[in-house]
Amino acid sequence: MSSSSKLPYGVRAKNHPNILVRKLFAIAEAKKTNVTVSADVTTTKELLDLADQLGPYIAVLKTHIDILSDFSPETTTGLKHLAQKHNFLIFEDRKFIDIGNTVQKQYHGGALRISEWSHIINCAILPGEGIVQALTQTATADDFPYGNERGLLILAEMTSKGSLAKGEYTTRSVDYARRYKKFVMGFVCNRALTEEQSTETSKSEDEDFVVFTTGVNLASAGDALGQQYQTPQSAVARGADFIISGRGIYAAPDPVEAVKRYQEQGWNAYLERVGL
Ligand code: 5BU
Image (cartoon, rainbow, N blue to C red; front, side, top):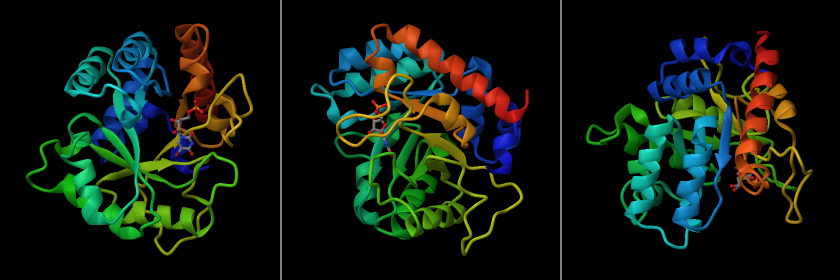
């Protein structure tokens, strides 16, 4: 468990050097939620309806924008509007994984214009340090229009059975996060990473990476395709600052009732962890 895991969101909001992370923790504190809903639906109407219904109870809405069958500028205009209306951040789970020159074009511009509407993105580090360097370069350039309102999560571990994101891959994720702190805000992983990693980079006094954990579900242990689930309680106890749930919420008979349950359980687990 990292030392920052023991601090209340409000304290982390005040002290954090990254403006987007401050905003994220401030949202969590104000709305009393650490829930990220993974809105894996396939039409714009379903996505926007879900965002509007669940918006009051979540801190972040996670998208897979490329699974929409009718993606258009209206999709992202709608998302941006709802993010403002309900005060949540948008996380496009695009998992960039290519050479630096390509990911820069996939992130900023292109058909999906991800940098324009998504506060948070993520990348895998299979290509090596260059992918993190390239995305950081784009987001910190003088002419990047979205300034301090964007952040990168390194995909350090995965929830699927037999995942190869472990060992040295995970250790390097921490190294690269430390080297590119201007843009890297944290990790997608299954536990707090930074205390137990013995790496070539060392932890600085003010280090505070945010942990997002996927694979959270109250009703199921997994799916037929290798997904492995844990509860909000266990994810938060292991270090998740934000719990990500998809089908557990949007495929429930009553998604609003479901999101409220995840909110309550995630929040209570957080209060217990920080001793409030
Ligand atoms: P689910 O319906 O709660 O199983 O959806 C999980 C979401 O999180 C889905 O969008 C995945 O793409 C995403 N995910 C994951 O399940 N496991 C991982 O390790 C990572 C992302 Br990274």
